Length: 60
Length: 391
Ligand SMILES: Cc1cc2nc3c(=O)[nH]c(=O)nc-3n(C[C@H](O)[C@H](O)[C@H](O)COP(=O)(O)OP(=O)(O)OC[C@H]3O[C@@H](n4cnc5c(N)ncnc54)[C@H](O)[C@@H]3O)c2cc1C
Ligand code: SF4
Ligand code: SF4
Image (cartoon, rainbow over all chains, first blue to last red; front, side, top):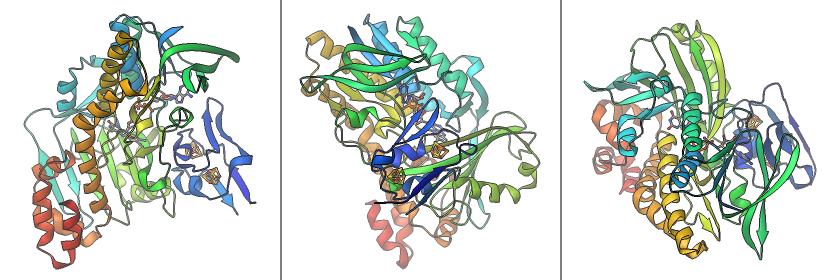
């Protein structure tokens, strides 16, 4: 499966909402911010819809 | 080897830590943030009934405003007022409150440390036996008889322990909020809630006052929407000159679990508390009191298990039982109410605003008087199906 996943770190508030809904367990919130595990991502776009700040962009 | 390690110093984790430390156990409470409680992910509302039920002696400096009621606005602008002649709740300063709770845990004898990120659970013979984490860039491992996951909405720990946690946007609201100063508050000491599917699809906008001209102005919407919560909130604020003129002191965001309670929250030597276990009131999104309640139940079950020298899933299962009896059944009812409210169009919301009293609304948020709501819905042929769902 392919696609692109991008985060705008200026917009991200490190709230963890995206992590809570990722079905593939591909996101993690550390003190450095959101950490994306590319190998696990299915580019489903759920995190982008969830993000209250509109900081994530996913393309299939 | 510690008795108990708790991951996450929110109100849930700090409660577990305090209660177990008071009983004399060797407890560690680890928090990944550099400052406990900040930035907040919260509207900071806490009801007096919860404070009394939990017997919390909250210090003055953690409380910003006394609340005497609420005003609920239907999509057509009609309002329903809920008013009391006494204080029925508070708006907290959450970062002070969370810190105070962690202080209490430390005072009771728990070892509390911020800036400590727990990366993984340790296992022995397939059972949880400790944690691996980092502190100031140094990796460390620590063993414990019991590990508690109180790691909030972004919880990883529960899944690592093998619990079935449903990650799905229907069970998670998307929240965005500004803490604003120099706003015009028409009703000091009152919460304001604005409903309407164009304002906040499957959710609402709130104003929680923190003084005469300071407030949390926020929104919660369904987690699978076309536009980000921020964009809905910004649009709404432009229509309110008294709010629009304000300054922004803080920007907050977060996911709010609004259902999906776990049948099972324990495995051998492990249990889950608070937002991590979706323990939130599905209708108003309040989770402070829920996480403390669950934290206390968890602490007494862990205490018994440690005394018995048996911290297996079978013994810890008592936590499931007690939580479901004391909180789960009620919250499950409220989750149903939420599912019904989510299906209401603006016309139905307007109709209800003309039929219901403020007291009714308040009782609904506690899972009471739902029969009355069903009866009112039955009055309209188109709403009968919706009403049935409540019964
Ligand atoms: C926008 C919004 C508004 C809200 N408004 C209200 C309200 O008005 N009233 C109310 O009662 N509730 C409200 N809530 C809900 C409330 O904030 C939560 O339910 C409550 O904070 C849950 O407490 P907790 O202890 O379970 O989790 P949290 O308070 O989230 O604490 C979890 C802690 O664990 C830490 N952590 C996570 N992972 C790790 C790790 N791997 N290692 C170390 N530490 C870790 C986190 O940094 C965090 O500090 C709101 C939520 C949102 C998002
Ligand atoms: S949901 Fe958005 S704002 Fe929150 S942590 Fe994820 S990317 Fe950042
Ligand atoms: S696109 Fe889907 S799988 Fe990838 S990080 Fe987002 S939610 Fe997870």
